Image (cartoon, rainbow, N blue to C red; front, side, top):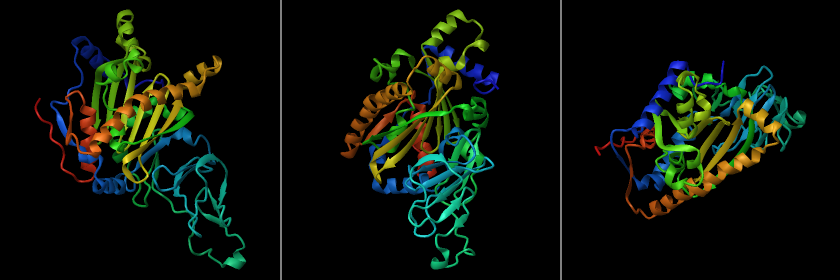
Length: 398
């Protein structure tokens, strides 16, 4: 399977839409504007609902299959606020557990990743297998016989779906693939995500509501203004396609190479899709996945310090296999690419978001407006409202 984009007909549909809109000076149109109350970014009551529903009881995309590249690898992650231990067992199956020893509740594995076949709690050396079973109680003769008490690690609902890893941080029903992907299965299968090794991670903390962070990735109306000296040199501003998949979303934007390709390659079916576009996915409720010529950037967005006005972005870069060869051949630095990404996001997008948060804190203005060309943002806000049973925001004529 080539590193393409869905089947040929869908790829051509997207490219044709982009070229037509480029020629006509148009973009994706939501049909009207939307007003969003500023209190959505400050309310403690709303924030408590979001924490409970989105970050405790909703399946979350944690990463890609390559985060656990082979059997007997593990990844301990605290980003959700609940310590989670993810493993690929000896048979290659993905599993997830609450990272809590059944003895006294301490974390069995410190945050990080590695390879091992069993886990010994650092407090009293209770030892667990990759299947979560309790294998050994230190000095069991002194402690007491607990072999019949089913004291293995607490399993969390988990699923590996077309190269992505999903976990619900709270015990409950099995994860439903259709609920998580909502029709994006074919897209993900064609990206060959599991073939993209993770080569870098970074954390960006900021003083802004987590939904404002998600908004940062959902429109390019600002590109030629805010990013005039950076991203606008490569991408085409205010030009995009937009498709929704229940609460999820796909947005495709084009870069400057599209203009050259149109001139010198008359056959659209041979255009190098990945070299001339960037495809953004929103995985409800908090993940942005960007696919381009470099590979895949996954951005997991979480509230920080139990505050509605602080957030953390965990950025993982999974490199395209061919790009990895190019980096190695030419002695290029992964860190340089990560730094460039961080600088554009933190110093430009997030800096603006922090300004918005300052005004939201004092309620000035009382609401913000999302334009017809900001349909992804309109979708984000109503998807989140739907998830916690709030009234949807109307789209108003404009």
